[in-house]
Image 1 (cartoon, rainbow over the protein chains, first blue to last red):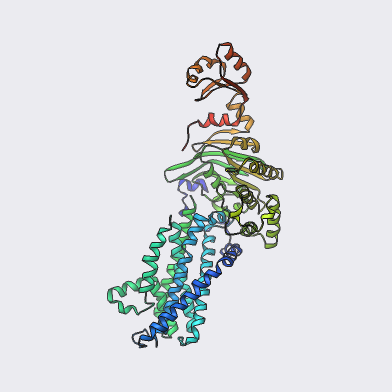
Image 2: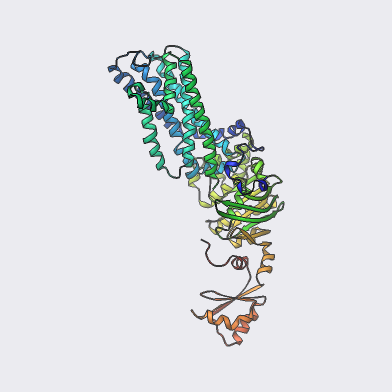
Length: 281
Length: 304
């Protein structure tokens, strides 16, 4: 094999799943105990950042600030109160924040500081398996944080149907997937952590503020509105809100889902490719 | 166990390994020697099936790393040059978690981790953090971890670099015990005494190629004389004096502080030197070592 491909055997031309490799499921299952120890070590900090911080946001923005805003469904994308408007957006952008922060420093740590990936690669696990388990863990964090968030918010009477919040939660999970894979791909290439500051300042914060979580993007004016429509978070916010508010445009749902799934798939391929290149020093 | 034909590795335009042939047999301890940048680590990473082959043919345990990487890695133990222990896990968990990656069931994993703690003489440290271990303990833990899957082939990249003499000897004992137990060892090192101690057969690599191959004894016989006479004269005299005694040995090497005369009979060289009316400040006759071979083959200038 090696002689046939000759000097061209670069990481990119290698098959992602060589014949001798484990099934995707088996590859992840073998890392379960590892991620369980990570969870045991980090869950306390996670409780604060995943559950407490967003609740403070809900109280401050949704209840206190929102009290000044007139609950006009025509101007709030169908929501009857500002709280009902802002909650689905907040949870979606919260999903993004967790996904991003769990896929930045921890990825660099596993490459550079702890070298966990190198140790894992010396076993039957492949790069693809490392990405799957890593993203799987990030998604566990995202999904659990969003679920708790949605449950806590339910008694406030912001949801109109019982199934809406469930679909909204799935939308938030989808937001997490898209960002986790894309940001993993970014982090796997990064040589120093300065790039993360850039990502947060130029990526996460503007997205949080201008993707329609806090105000309808129609307020932005026609040009900026279209730019906002191109951001991945807007698709998630819009999806999450439609389900929560109970005014669902299924063709728009299809578009959002296609966009987010496409981003996830592209992000996953890039993540595997970038990590493969990075680890093959 | 390992068979390489014309094996190459390149990174962009740089060729780290320029076509080497290697054959490692079951149960032997095989060494890769060479200065920094000789291509040892690149070769090891290809053998470990984590770095794709750029050219030539490589078979590990009869399999092709390009297609059967995971299957090969499942039967290898790898002890890397830089520690890749998980500092956030305790000592026991480092072994246990690693075993799980190989698909070993939990009970067996626990049992095996316990055995290996004993083997590495760190049982009392089982619950300690990795950070709190000494350098020697970390190395022993790394080797213990590489044995969690009962490997057929153990790859050790500079296993004793940075250890004190006591820790090195403990490690050598352990590696010797593994070899007795039938594990095939592949070792890179730039300690010649380590290579002489551990390796049945070795290759000396230089600039991506194999410069010599054989047992330590064979290499000394082929590339050096039986003995070496070291003659120390006053500073600055060595260059001029070398010409006067050139004929006394197979080869004379001039160093800033002494002359090395390579000959099968060192004492005769010293006698002859004195007979010529030369009076070295100090003389020493010793057997040739692998280090003499190594420096002969790879030169004395620094590679990096």
